[in-house]
Amino acid sequence: YLYTLPSCVDDRDYAITHVIRGEDHVTNTAVQIELFAAIGGAAPQFAHHSLLIGADGEGLSKRLGSLTIEGLRESGVEASAVTSLLARLGTSEPVVPERSLAALAEGFSFADAGRAPARFDDAELRALSAKILHETPYDDVRERLTPLDVSADLWAAVRGNVATLEEAADWRAVVDGAIDPVIEDEAVTAAAADLVPDGPLTEDSWSPFVDAVKGATGAKGKKLFMPLRLALTGVARGPEMAPLFAMIGADKARARLRGERA
Image 1 (cartoon, rainbow, N blue to C red):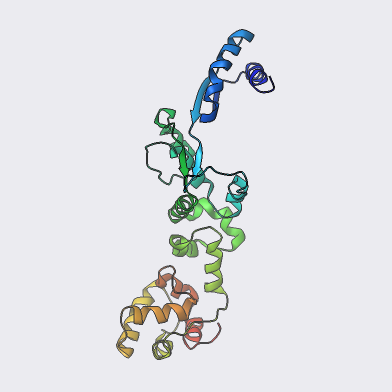
Image 2 (tube, rainbow, N blue to C red; image 1 turned 90 degrees about the horizontal axis):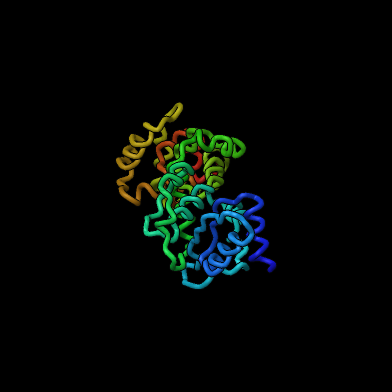
């Protein structure tokens, strides 16, 4: 009485046209359709989606506090990644990154949904979120990047290497702030410091600079690029160096290549 009958009365009184719920409620549907007929109301259209299980096949526990919309938002997962995953989860259709709800709705059909439990993989969701960011133009996230003091040029340079929007601010700190450079090969970085071009740097400055360092030291491949990246950014992985080099600037680049905090 506390669920089956009152839910039908509410649905009738509020003129509910569609009820979408989990597969575990399928057994309620026939009884509720009969109740709608008994109380004098048109039955809504019912649809049931598969239940979620974890990547390990176990049921998702409500004790997993991070698996909430609030928790996902706080951890940096993009809203469009959640909707992109949910629109295809439990179907045979591939999950693809889609920032437009209208596009997701156009390609959505309950006819594609299976009844078997659908596996939810947190790693898949976060990879999807990162891929969406990699394809997101600055204007679409301008309002969120402005408080982080991330410019359009910086976003264009780093968006392909961030997993969350907030990580773009870490690269702003690398470009605009002071870091402790990592000197892996002092012979290479010391020679490079003397070869940094004078005046303002541009993206076109990077290739001639690297060629000059290669010619002066004989270093090539990883033994050339890794010492330069570590000295200039302090980390072994990241965005393309050409735009970062231009934004770091000549004076700061020389200091970092000499091992100075700058």
